Amino acid sequence: MNHPGLLLFLLSFGHMCTDIVQGALPALLPYLKDKYSLSYAVTGTLLLAAHLTSSVIQPLFGYATDRKPFPVLLSIGCLVSGIGIALVPFSPDFAWLIAFVMFTGLGTAAFHPEGFKATACIASVKRATGMSFFSVGGNLGFSIGAPAAIFLVSHYGLHGAAWLLVPAAIAGVLFLPALPHIRRRIAEISEGAPSAAQTGAERPVYAVSLIVLIVVFRSWTQLGLATYIPFLYRAQLSSHPEFVATLLFLFLGAGTAGTLLGGPLADRIGHRKMVFWSMALQVPLIHLSSSRKAGWFSSWPPAWGPPSCRPSR
Image (cartoon, rainbow, N blue to C red):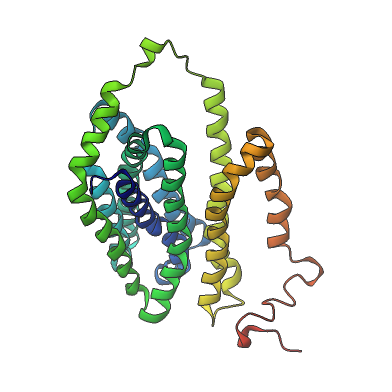
């Protein structure tokens, strides 16, 4: 377990298992809406609560772990996110539902800062490779989470979503024997790294703020689509929820492919151009995906969809 490659694989696997939970939550929203008789606006607040918890609290975990390494958060974060999603189907009322969803976000917030730091320290001089490998695990988790949730709910009812605890629990347990090695790696890199005061490094506030703004808009779009794709197609494909899961898997799985292809492409055409065109191309594609003009849905699903979903002639 001391080998850097094994540690990086474990970190990527833990990232995948944690983000399976995050990817599953949007797919569960239509079922939670029906169970608790929620409006669309109130249903959207569930995802808002999860991501506000993970996003607002995450910098606090990052600040704390920068002062003192706390790799046990890798195991705790996986377990907390898994327990949270497992409790969601058993919520007695809406207040408890919000609490469990926020508990899930808390696990995500605990895992990610320590996960990114551990990956950077273990990868050492091959930091870009290590970070991309870690990110692929998260993207893959998002793409797996939605179809996994719909499959479980379709076959075992809403309570079947509790099985999403299993991968998170496995990752949490696997981290335990690796924690001493991860702690030592972080300590070795931290002791040898010069501080910002020693290097005279400036803080590029404008550049960082611009990057954060771009990430906010990108996440806004991605989460919005992941949240409402199930609602958009559910009325037309209500008898085939697995097909909705396929759509979500293709959408979120494209993020994994984009992570793998985007890096080399950005190196070839330039990072600024890559960011600009990746954002700009979303506008017409999102419009086409939601357009109802010119009979866009009249031939949906296509011929390769479930037979009973094909429109009658």
